[in-house]
Image (cartoon, rainbow over all chains, first blue to last red; front, top):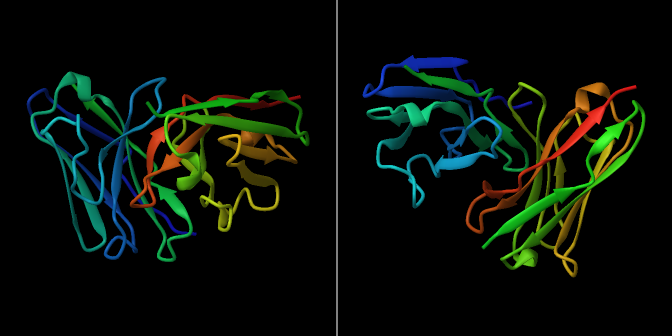
Length: 108
Length: 119
């Protein structure tokens, strides 16, 4: 079955840039989406269609995708950005949805 | 305002069955594909199943196929998940999630319902 691979954890100091990667064989043909999940809450999409920022998401969140890798960048990370981040996409058929394993972002 | 409210979770013994429901409001339910996503304790998100707006297309994650059945009732603005043959590893929070109208991703989520499988 199709898999998306993320690093388990990323740690940065406040104000630094955090980058979270996601690799998957179908990413050259399928969009990547990024979800933020804070403890005890439902996930919220922070990047859609590789690089679009939904309304209400701070400008410090950006996305990119090249080849088999998508990247979520948080420029000037803040303590409130501490959360689990999941990349999401579909397999090449589009019929099966897949999440990456998640990356715990620590800002301290 | 889009609202998705799950119900039907609880404690069930291994091998047992449970039916989850999701009540939708604030949007035209019959125009959107709908999904179930779960999250085991301390683990990541896992897609469970998707159903198209008119129930024509239904898909399951491999580990759930044959045990879980997704369905919907557009007249009642409701989504369902029938879970049979439950195992300890099915213990999770189950979320109902709406598909965006443009792309196959989840733009709105419910708050989830807890399912615990234990003897």
